[in-house]
Image (spheres, rainbow, N blue to C red):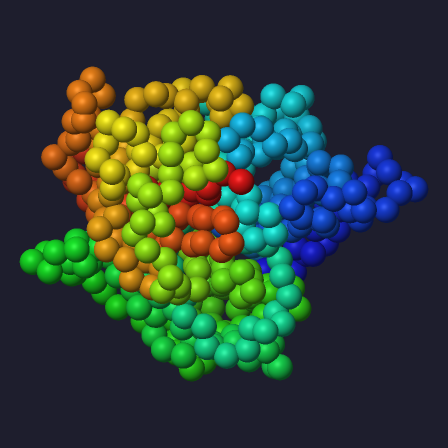
Length: 438
């Protein structure tokens, strides 16, 4: 992490306390599910790191966007303002102050960040796309993890992972680079150190098709950039991971992250512009019925999923890329077979609660292994038929199915191999992160 990150955290905490100089910033009047302030650490596509602090008593937040490189702190931004729980399990964060001016981001309350939370465990966040103003940032999906203690984390833990933030410079991950797999982390709690017990298991989306049908070839390149049995870094008392070793011959590439072993979650950012990953402990109890039809119903029932998708388009070789975001309500529409999930996009802002009745995407998971789900994403081409008409083209999808208590989260990655003649207009990385409604 940056040397001054804790300094920025305290600055943010001070911003929360300014109106209440003679009152404590503790939470003695807690929100229903979390009774104290909660801090989340996360990574976003196409890069960068975020920290978010919720004060549940006063319904205020401070969010630090670690823009650009870690070495340059002058471009970092601290956002603050109130938050409120709105429809379908979303949280609306309203920006009323920033530490510096950012093109396209107003501080009069008109600029919003939307989020969903499993309180004290995980946060997914999607900032509004700023107005088309020169110099405005391109925000993608932010996957985040709560600060925790490292008590009980000693030993080897196997995590599934999904790449949620791909390198800024870009590449085609569909049949070249690993975007899902597993890590075996060896945590020495007494020493506060972290290493890998073996080379990471890394696979491409072609290997999803191979999982479902062995006649498809699994094309992959082993990820040898992170060595096994080498102390990579330290894990702090709040579960924060900071890399100390050089890896891959690149002394400037420093991983940072956030372990929460008690909740089985880990977020990792891979350094300046290198992307990042969401991880969850392998869980053999996850079944297809957990994340196909069985538990999800239309009509505002607790089984419904809701969340976000980021479509990070193919690069043009000069660093340019396309980026679009969308919010979804996800359930089983009766116009689809029983083992499909239907994705219904929001027409306007999430706060308007206008969900498109038509289905934009459909997902069917066909195989499950230790918490990983494999299947296909289908585009809906005709909503007037019953059942709806699905496109012939399917996209292999790898997902982490996380469930704990009565809460579930689904993190998926898919994409398409760009056509060299039309690459700026084709997405090559799509990430969906969904949480079931409380």
